[in-house]
Length: 405
Ligand code: GLY
Image (cartoon, rainbow, N blue to C red; front, side, top):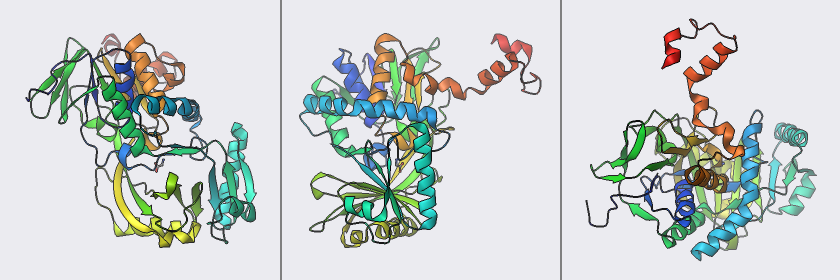
């Protein structure tokens, strides 16, 4: 161990991405001694994502409970961003909406109309647009675009700027970093006692926050966390002297779906993203890049003039229901804040608040209650169903003595 490697702390945060850094900052600002073990960053969703804040345009059927959490986090964003800027002296990356969803062909238009009707039923604000109206809002759209849907509340945030600002804000209130990767969480008598790193060194702490995104399932010493990496290939285009879109554009293009997210000052347009269940596959493929550029061109022909500045792969942390895991782990002192899948940048403010509330006040925020890890505890779910008389205990594989464990 080097002299500077921390050996003890009040809290160890596993993960140096948005969840880890935002949580660490909040906890250190409240007076705790916090150490972050950063781990993997190159393909972390926090670094690679486009940074859409899209609770409305990204909502899908059957995800109404998640929508509540997404909207609660969106509501916090303006004050959260202002606070981060003040605490760090750096830009937060927040860029106001609206977001414009568009449909390329007739089938895409039917899909957009279905989405608009669904949003209407949920009471979410959006306005349907003709092709002409959509092109008035975003003149770079292809003239052949069929229809649009304007969502005033959805915005974006440059996640790389936000991560830099959160890191700086944390450092200003004393957050320390331990180099390396966590090998396992150490525990004794059902309580965490810290972490052991891959090089054999350890950091002792009574509280451990697991916030390492797609890698959460790889940490041992705790019951397996059901998180899988969902690969996304994503491009960063440099518009140079060419105009860039003024708003975030989400496009249904011949049955596929892409988004183009412009940054302030014409610095870049992020085009994403593939969704691939390939595990930790780091390959940027010709097919992935081709499809993203093809669909970007259908929506915004001007995009072919931009420079292809970066093609990267990131791993969304997916869970069995694709909603985050926020809450206490089975070991005393363990807090889980992972599994944010497609909504990590959006859910950063509320995740930091949930973690702070748990660590500082041992309380679960109401809005986070449906997202505890216990929802994936098969035995517990079966037992509840048995108690309600819905399932035969033998068929569920439980004997009476199991109930006493
Ligand atoms: N939220 C955008 C994505 O996951 O690609």
